[in-house]
Image (tube, rainbow, N blue to C red; front, side, top):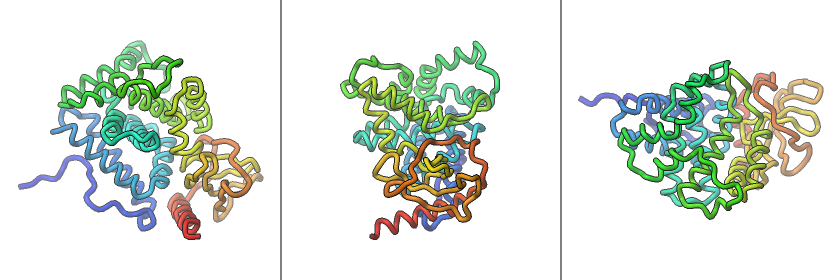
Length: 335
């Protein structure tokens, strides 16, 4: 008698965004996050752990392939709102950003695979601690600091103990916090240091935009400014690739326009800082009903700065906005 699989896996074809409701797509990403959370929390109870991680990677790629802008919108809404279950959501956001950045950097498939698997499992040695720290209002204790310092080696040990043999996956996890010489060219580094550096940049960015009980998440503008400042000084293509791939203000980001309105980014464009946005609040504080779509690539106003989630006090119909964004892109493409 065949038993049902103990972890969420896609059982039907992923619906295209124009056919699926916002709730359907959000549910698929939430199921993926939930399944990954159970695997990361119980690695020694998972038969063929490596195959399970690769299954979740393929599921993630299926969702991204349908519509990357919709996926980014959903993920950034999740990442900047949730602090509960932080470890799995952070792993998933980092995996998505690594996948997109790997494409921008033109990594070969095997390198992308090792990088994304490392992103999903880099903190498996401190999963419970990471979730605790996300809701902890006090600074980490001395004991917690020790676990944080040693978590990369601990994560490699866990992965080895559950049968992972891919040396690049293991070495990237073990070294993803090791800083390279800031005066060296990242492109001249060996494979593992390059992949570890890519993961470190993505990890840092995702952590900065995510909220904790002890602090709100930083705006993506602040986060990108920090990443890019490091990139400029270190001849680093990774920070630039990340921004080219997701934009200075990714889909799902709330922004203030230079005319004073508040908007939310719906879809990327060919220019990193000129996405399609939906105007939500006028400069006088009135809510636009319905929200007004605006292409910053073709006319003013332009984005002035990103806003944190807690700075925007308006109820948003995400389902309607996503559909409008998709239809607007279709209409533009057909001209």
